[in-house]
Image (cartoon, rainbow, N blue to C red; front, side):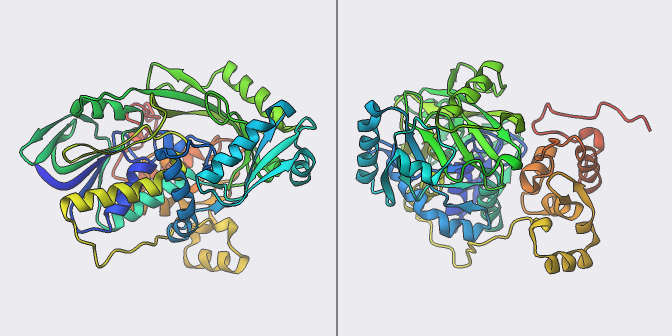
Length: 475
């Protein structure tokens, strides 16, 4: 049985953030993930927003981690080579009777220490966003809010952790755990693992791990949010993220540009008993279309190219659950919005606590930076020509919609924690994320995976274990 100083359960954005921060320390660290890749759960299907921190209740973990995580983003995005833009956000008010709620949101943000907050009149808001509805009578501007690519962010954190010595084991589910002397024994479906410390970053399943070791039980509900993604031709309809005043189930349906030039609408909020249901529904998508139009007029809904849903890990206490729950067992549970923003701060906090408990010295050769897969089509012409001259595969376009080359896909497959599935390639390169939604490029991507990996084409998966694509070969 292999032994580690710390084992992290879950390779979402929180688990990868903890792993990267722990990799600053001397020690043996392992990340266990039941899916075949990083960023397979909540982290891949969300609003892609870096929140400013104005709506979290003062004094909560959400407020503390949100504000700290937001402040870390500029340096982090530079170090990890991930797309990030501080475009700002508007919270719009649609009736004058609710203006006091807008003021209360502003005051809450000031209490949380959020910089760059301003209250605007309806006219001032429409000067910033001409497509706001005429009913908008006021807005809160949050200048520090931004947008990011969740896939690139999670992958960047995980890659950098791996490059600094953290091991990753995929397709491995933790079934149970028990305390043994001064260590934890994690029983998985691929064998047992011993650890001096365990980090519970298991998303919607974090309550199950927590409840195995603590008498104070957690209840995490999978809260499904459905989205619509519009073509890049609609990406300039708004320049800021546009929220409506928060309600019982969160921040409402937003309208936002994405870092890749699309327009995103959503999410809904529906609590589920099942923790795996990511189907979209006619009612949910109808709700997205109707509610997104409350604040923004003229939405070009005929430009929708895909819809999707994600599950948020909603904890009954409505706050993050962080810290040492049992001896050597650390929770990062209930990480819903603003979890994407908060992840670097959560990683920083928990890694510090674990390093202190285990007396882990700082690593002298830690390297903070990594380079992502280059997007050839976005390079200046001279650099593009030079890349193709060095490697002709960069000149062979596989995905026409996003202009992704064979060279980029090969880079994604052979990079640290490289792609092993169709979705893995898609999230690393955007091959398949364009208007045709992989209708043209998926067969070629499958061929490249089959050629480059020690697997037959029949074993190529879309994502998880039960997502094989090819049934049999005809020739």
